[in-house]
Length: 502
Image (cartoon, rainbow, N blue to C red; front, side):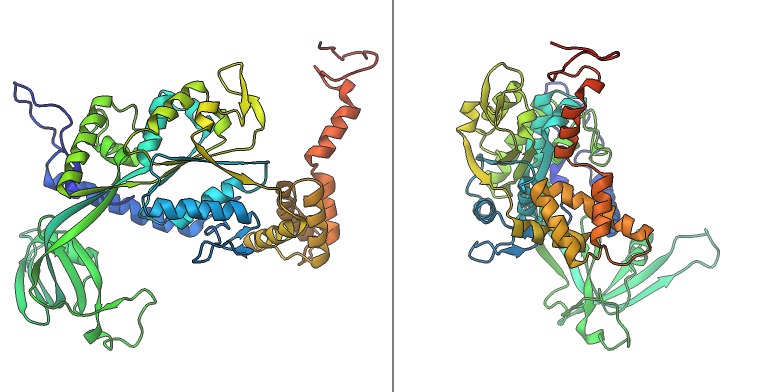
C-alpha cells in the first residue's frame, strides 16, 4: 500500500448553516504524517513477509511470456502453451497501460485446468505497480458482512487509481556533518544538534530539534549520505550515498546505492506524485471507520453520499490538472457463481466514466444463470455476454503438460528422473494436469520414505495408488453405488440398509 497524500483528507459532508467542528483527522498535518508513517510501516512489514513465500498453485507465474512485439514465446516467465490466449491477453495489457479500454470487459472461457487463472496472474504481473489490480472470487460476495452490490462497488473502486500531483518544498543535499549535543543529566533537557548539508554550489548549517535527531538516527543517516527533507512534514528520505565518499569503506553491502551530489540550491520546489485508489480515499473519508480501516480491512458499508462527493472532488482535481485517473483491472474468477442481481449491477457499473477494465473467468458450458430458471452460455446473461471480449483457452498438448510439469518440479524443488517425468506426463494426459501436479510432492514424500534422492517411477506409482483421480473415483462409485446412502443411480435389488431415491 502506498502513502496517502494529505489532499485525500477532506470532509465529505456538504456545507450547512450551523458550523460543524471538523473531525480531527481531516486537514490536520500531524495526523497526515501519522498516517504516512503507519502506511510506510505496513509496507516495510509486508516486504519482510514476502521473503517467506509459500509455493502456491501459480507462484511460478512471472508474466505473460511475450516479447516486445507481443508475440508469445513457447515457454517463458512460467507460461507454457495457450499462445493465442496469451497474445490476446497481451493486447489487453497494452491497451490497459495506454488507458484506452476503460469500462470494457473480457471473458476468459475454457475447460478446467487450461490456465485461465494463470493468464490473469500473468496479466497482473505484466501491468506493473502503477496500475491497480484487484482480484475477487465469485463466491466471496455471498460470505461478506455487507450487501453484494456494496462488495462489488468496493472491488470496483479498489481497481481505480488516482495519481495525485502535489508541489512541495524540499531540502536536498549531501550530509557533511551531524553534531548532536546530549545533555549532561539524563532527562534534564532534550537533545539538540546541527546538520551541515551541501550541494555543488553551497553549504548550510541547520539547527536540529529532538524529533529531527530521532528521525536521522532511525534512518541511520551519516556523513556522505544524500538526503531529502520534506519541509512541510519533516519526513527524511535517504536517496543514496555520494560518489565522492565511495572509497570511505573497503566493503559495501549489495544494497548500497551511489548518487551524485545535488547541484543548485539546497531548497527547491518538487512535484511529488502519490498513487492511491478511490477505495482508499473512500475509507479515509468514511465517518464510521476512518483511516485505521485501511489496516484492519474491516471497512463496512460506505455511504453513497461520501462516494459522490469524492467523485466530485476528484473531477475538480482532474480539471485543475492536480490529479489523473488510472483505470486498473478487476479480475473476478468463477464468474458463473454471481447471480442475476450482480450481473445487473455490473452492466450499469461498466457504463461509469471511471470504470476499470473487468476481466472475468469461467469453466462452465451452457448452464443455469444463478437466481433464475433460464440457461445461458457460461451461466452469464446474454445482454452481459454481449459486452465481453471473449478469450478462449484450449486443452494442453502432451508436450505442454511435460513442460509445465518440469517447471513445477523446479518450483517445488523436487528432483525427478526422466522415466518418472514420462509417467507423470502420461498420467496428466489420461487424467488431468492438476492431478499430475498434485502427485509431484506426494511422490517426493514416498521417495523420502525409502531414503532416495531422486523421484523414480516406483514413487510416482505409489502416489498414484494412494490418491485416486476423478475417473477412478467415479468408476468405483458406479460399481459400488448400492453400498452408498441416497444413491440416485440405477440399482438392482435393494439390499438391507440401502435407500432408493426417485
